[in-house]
Image 1 (cartoon, helix red, strand yellow):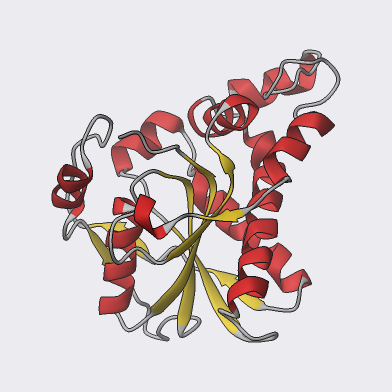
Image 2 (cartoon, one colour):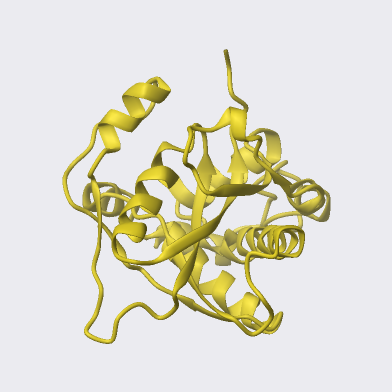
Length: 227
């Protein structure tokens, strides 16, 4: 809340490069949206849905994601959602994951309750609502669906290997389906960052167990894997 108030009363600086005049300047927007790309399967865990990301998690993109997610700069939601939507449209055009006018649920990867309390907002769910609305403008019958819940607590993923991440997350997600069932037979899985894909793998497993197909995952950014 304090960040939102300060945005109104203080001169704005770019969250990516700190240039004055815009919350996220044109040059940083160009960096964020220049080259949406499919993540190489060899860089992800086996079984992760086809994953596309707007940009590498570095430089101005990394600073913007951190400002939005960790420091409550919710004014950045629009530009991050636009990047995710552009990535999704590029991926759909390349893969044929959905036909025009087909129903699709945009499912955000959930954070733990403790993390949400600490941040004071739900960054990925906010993006999911915006992405669904923008996809509808492109002709898809998209609806946000916050179906995933954490079934148990997990350890912080930072510093864990791929194998440790899988073990840490195994069985940690579940799907809460209403009496009307899921809003679509397939889902676009949405997250802010992908590293090994362990979180996307677990989320897709939970959705698949509920009978929802996950042909595609989209993230705002992707970390560069280190050997």
